[in-house]
Image (cartoon, rainbow, N blue to C red; front, side):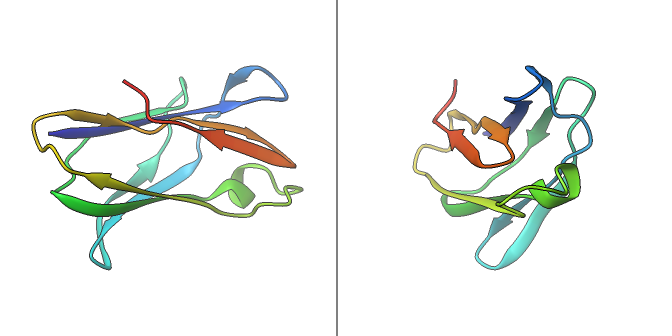
Length: 99
């Protein structure tokens, strides 16, 4: 089982490098880090159950309306890869179940 994310800046059309991200499960931090030059984090290992991935969007976009984006998701099948992309701009964001 693995987890990855990809953060893209919708204003510039470029990867969002250096965004602080943490993965939480049952109130504990499982992993934390920053997106790489391609806006990605890979190789984190979630567990079965409900998780939160927290993006420090205010640290990346100081003028944003959303200083933090939290995406809550469930890992039901521990054998599958879980990918949660984030498309970000100062006044909007979107996410989806990636592959």
